Image 1: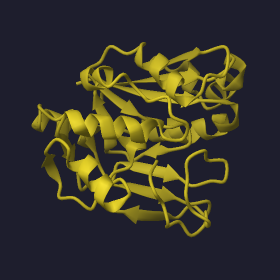
Image 2: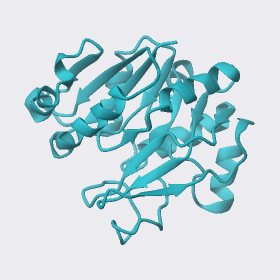
Image 3: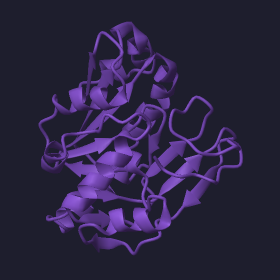
Length: 231
């Protein structure tokens, strides 16, 4: 089953695209397409895609907003370009584990009523080391509202919203990514959890890069990790 991967990128994050592209090329899933949406003019990120070889790959489609409109609108514009039933978010500064698309799409096939799937994330630190953050919920089918309830009682999300694979129909029902600064993917995840069950994995699927330019963070130590509240 085809998976379409959405990446929104602006000029300050363009240099991370080569690592995101490398992680996509390493995927064991055989059928994927990468939809890169540039937040700004084409020149803000296209040279980086050309330099790493992504722009010449037939699996990659690049479009530009022309002006800066922010991550939520940019992702939603990319969503409007999709056709596949499964949509994977990949932020420009993050990386997918090699089996991520295979594991997440398989979980949604195994649980066809689930609206989305997610696995644990690892923090990717400036040193190159990885810090695991297991999901504090049992793997498998997770009933509607479970993630929202966990968030309200623990004041943090149990899964990383940046690494979710979505059923496209649910994404459209939720209206795509929310227009909330720094909370675009968190708000979407909470809305989706209130509407649909989920499939949770115990297989790590996302490498979440920690760096000082992040818009969404809560930590004082980018080399040590920890203290993270997703959002």
